[in-house]
Length: 540
Image: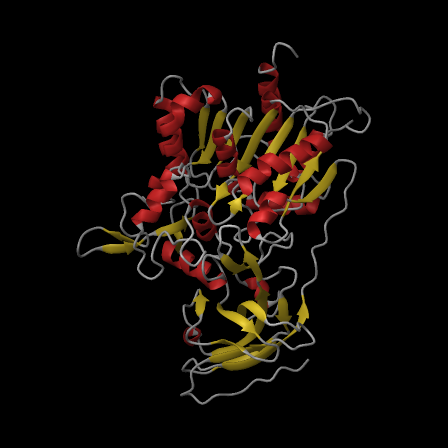
């Protein structure tokens, strides 16, 4: 399809039009339009954008956009890494447009919002099924930043292809009645299940269960696979870690004498992120209840596992690390132990680098009245800043307004915070100035999402059930400064009394990044198995 490109006079403001023909999508669209600019057409420009290192892209909300009526990107549109489309350097670009279609949610709390309904892709805004995509075209930006282009979307991205099950890996997807009622729309939970060698051959055998937490993926727990090339790519990303490839783990998992366990990787994407954080939330809804009352009972009924606390262990890293700790702490009598890796902030006095209770500004560090500096939110292991917090916030807002960008800071506000008057998450800081909203910060703490604070306030009640169950691991140069909150958690737990916590902390040193693990996944499973054996009830 040929795409019209209109040259502008140098005095004309930048304007990009994105049109949805009726034969592509017949109904009016509420959602967000995007345009992407790159000097390379491969991969598609839309696939070169969206992360911290990104080609320039710009987004704008649309409300009931009729077929044939253009959605417009102009000076009012949010951009990343350039704030304005007028800042595009002069030159020739490959450009592409997409339209993200939102779903209307009439929630049980009385709020009605629009957001992207996850289609089992894990909230990937530029690859999600149902996204409308244009052809790539050449666009010229003149010396004063003037650009004009007209795009028509021409295709709809297809549904996710779920990998087939095999002897060892099974995939489950169920509709959650709890979440469906709250969101006013069908909502789904699921899991990828890894079975031990001999599971089919021993139909009367029951096994301990590992509950693995983390970002949405249809791959198996611990990366189990027979695909050596894909696991090699995974290994290249795990700097400084002892973690083995998925194919190496598979070899161990299926070897004679390896511990016989069932591993579940639970799937619970929300309209705000690829993962709900496994707790009840004013914005995400009752995901904690749905997981504990629907998903886990379903899985424990359909797979032969030992349904007792001593035989349920948790693990996860980053987002999954926070969840592996939170599930253990919030349900101390249900789970028997947790191995927590590089968790998201577990003490909001170190929300990455921000003290939400003490700092007045998240974006800027004020040294004195004459000296200020931007606060970084990511670093290399040798301490070099990668991106500033205000830039990451800008990325969130370019991907989606009202905390619908599907990035970390957005989901943390959706998970930990109250709903604002419009039904979307109440911001923890001002997007322009960075000023922290202390009332919102205190609500995060007082509602139990600051895990260290929650432990402190409830230790006399929950401490006896947590003795020996908490094991935390983190690199000393975590790329997102997550080790800072882990230090505070350790300081609390190692000084708490009546009872003593009886767990462990370990740090990768020196210069160990986000993703560091002290052992292979196979060794972790062996440790879990030995731990479970020591806690076997005397009646077993």
